[in-house]
Image (cartoon, rainbow, N blue to C red; front, side):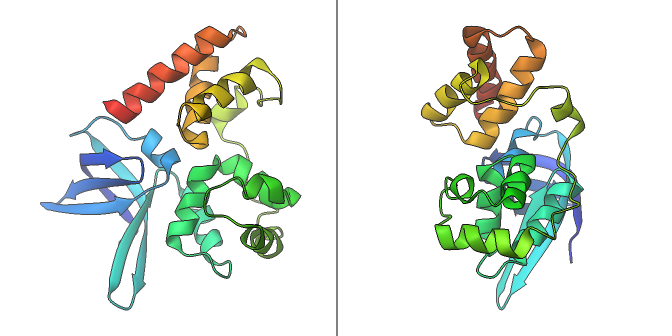
Length: 204
């Protein structure tokens, strides 16, 4: 089984990358959060990999951090959740927000993720709430930026980015970087900064 992959980044899209290692190109499915951390094409990248084997199917799923992979594996343990839905869950909310929603039993937050119905959300909560009780919520980078409060300037910027068609996880990551670069609350500066970062990642 492939557990880790390091090589040259040949291609990238929000849901997959192709990495050349040892003369072989590996297609790896990824969540948006991992895509957002990918560097430039032809650069070296490394991913934690989950190998999924089912009958004649062999698929690779990649993650920038061991924590993402660990949460992915926990999601797979839930009845009715396969690898594609698990990737969708990781793409729909940033990792700390997804863990928090499951811990708090926030069905409304979970059903906002495309492909997640009420029954699936309830199963996630019932089957994972205790398992995620000790799962670390915070990333070091995240600790430097205050949470986005409902109705705040940051929340308005996030809503604008989502309305423009960007995924919530990617929008939150870009906004976080924009806020670190420009600590003063300013809708236009944060929106411009976020769009610049998103354009660099999606259209480089």
